[in-house]
Image (cartoon, rainbow, N blue to C red; front, side, top):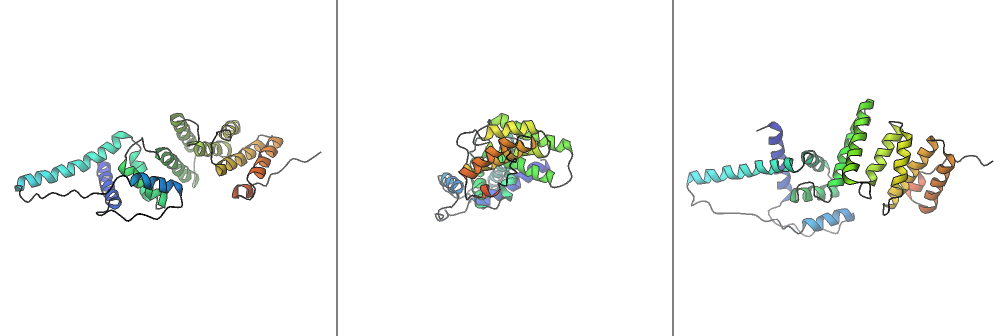
Amino acid sequence: MAVGSASLIATLAAACKAQAPSTPPPTPAPAVDKSVSDLQSKSARFAPTDLTADISALPANEREALAHMVRAAQVMDALFLEQVWAGNEAMLYTLIKDESPLGKARLHEFLINKGKEQEFYIPAKIELINTKSLKITAGKYAEADLLGLEKNYLELLTEFGRNTNTAFAMQKLANLQAFKLHKLTDAEKLLEEVVNIKGIRPNLLADCKLDLGDVYLLNNKPWDATLIYSQVEKDFTGTTSRQRVVPPFPPII
């Protein structure tokens, strides 16, 4: 067995053990984060159950064979995880490292419903790319590294489309294009697309409008920047997004 597969099997076993107590846990207090409470509600449909059997009457060779079958099942579980989607292993390790309530809820749901059809598959994949971005931009990097990140974001948008679920990734890609790759025209078009997505979260919309205003300034469009900054001032008065607005307005002649 490959070292990687063995490591994945051990990780799965440890994670499942941590997520499956021998007795059902008490009903948790309502979570403040709606995403956490939604995931906990879905996971609560599956009650933890201990499967036991009296194998004392079995001969020694059959008990040994049964132990081999259990170990084989653990191997198959890891192989299934890899076959469903090649990124499942990386996603599992990322979720294990996330100690936040939302991270733990996502890990629990992941272990119940392994694979690409999970509700949080898209945000988890976005987070994997964001983690890669932080790792690259935190140190020395070459243009090839940035182009690789751009490709990752574009592939994600091709796979899942440009909508409320991927708006955050679109913003990250636009920032990468504008402030690292200096592709100002591409960044401007992408941010204009994001701010016109219906149903986008208000704070994310405000941040994208502010980014768009910054890109307008870099593209020598001060009046467009003034207009978009003013929208944020009007719509998000008193929010943290508004506090970012310090627009270098063009002089009034």
